Length: 150
Image 1 (cartoon, one colour):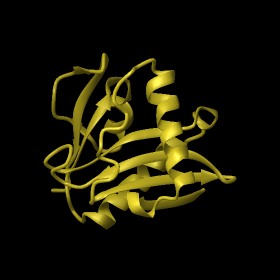
Image 2 (cartoon, one colour):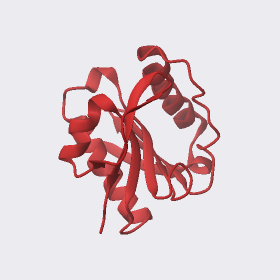
Image 3 (cartoon, one colour):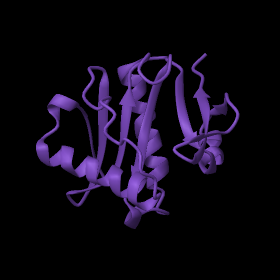
C-alpha cells in the first residue's frame, strides 16, 4: 500500500476525481443514499485527505478533520474501501493509518466520529466508545463515538 495524506490544495485533479468517485460510488450509489456529498469541508484549512493506493488504484480513503469542524474534537469520516478490497483486512489497516496521521497532526487529542451503527463493533474493538444514542443521518442509523486520549 502506498499512503498519502494531503490537504485540498495538494491534491492533483486526478486524485480529487478518484476520491470523489470512490465516495460517491459507496455512499450515494451503493448505499442508495442521495445526500450532499460535496459539503464544503474538503477544502477547508485543517482538513486532510488520506489516500491509500494499491497497484496505482485508489482503494482506501478517509477525510481527517481538525477540531471544531464537525465535532469539538478531532474527527474523521468518509471512510471508504473499494468494493473489490473488502474482507481483506484493509479496513483495519486504514483505521490504523487514520489514527497514526491524526496523532501526528493533532497530538494527544480525543477523536469523535459519527459511525454507521453496523460498524459499532469494529470501532469498539479499536477503543472507541459510544457517546450517543442511535440516530438517523440520511436515513442510515448512526451513533457518535469517541476515542479518548486521556
